[in-house]
Amino acid sequence: MRKGKKYVDSAKQIDRSKQYDPAEALATVVSTAKAKFDETVELHVKLGVDSRHADQQVRGAIVLPHGTGKQVRVLVFAKGAKAAEAEAAGADFVGAEDMVERIQKENFFDYDVVIATPDMMGLVGRLGKVLGPKGLMPNPKAGTVSMDVAKAVQESKAGKIEYRLDKTNIIHCPIGKASFGQEKLTDNFNALMGAIIKAKPSAAKGQYVKSCVVASTMGPGVKVNSAKLAD
Image 1 (cartoon, rainbow, N blue to C red):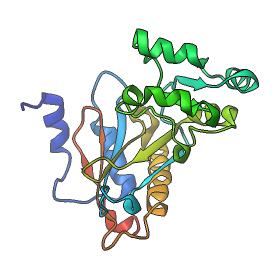
Image 2 (cartoon, one colour):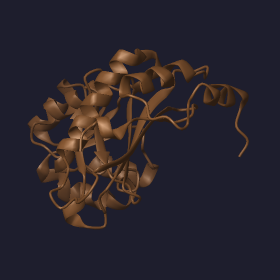
Image 3 (cartoon, rainbow, N blue to C red):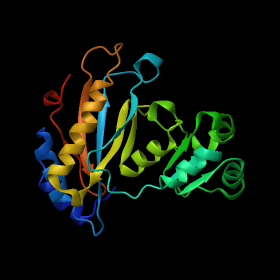
Image 4 (cartoon, rainbow, N blue to C red):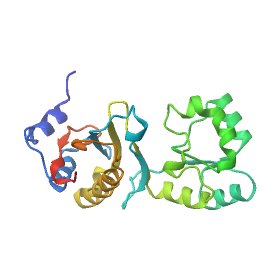
């Protein structure tokens, strides 16, 4: 695939054979983010685990110190007092059966996070086939199945992100926007990496963090020295 001129120019500024310290890597990502829009900066971490085994899953959620820079739209499945709490906390959409019907009949997906009270999970389960593949299914580990809907909404709005392994044992997560600058991105990077390292399964053997790369939406990847992170 042919790369654009900006990408090629940016790639020239990166030493492919080098593994950078996190702060230096993120400073490089910021300086090579040349798109006309504010690019998202992502972290890609390959772990020495096997996601096919239940005891080697790595999954959780964390509120990034500086958020993600993205306006997060939240849908809450709740009734009565809990629905009122969700609305007061700033949820964009709140509903129950009516919302299930809207998603099924109108293909409604104008939201980034779905939260549900535990009593609503039987109802939300009907949407598993459509919410699951989009990574939107509420999950207790991610804090999106909770009786404290106000807290769940506020954390999502503040920049809470969920991290989980894909089928190739890699975690892909946004850690902010290029406009954040190196310092804020480094804070977010350290917070997320700290959470991933803390979540190391006891069944994991050998080197835990195999490789780590940071990149902006349109820019080339920059390798981070994973030995300096923790193991």
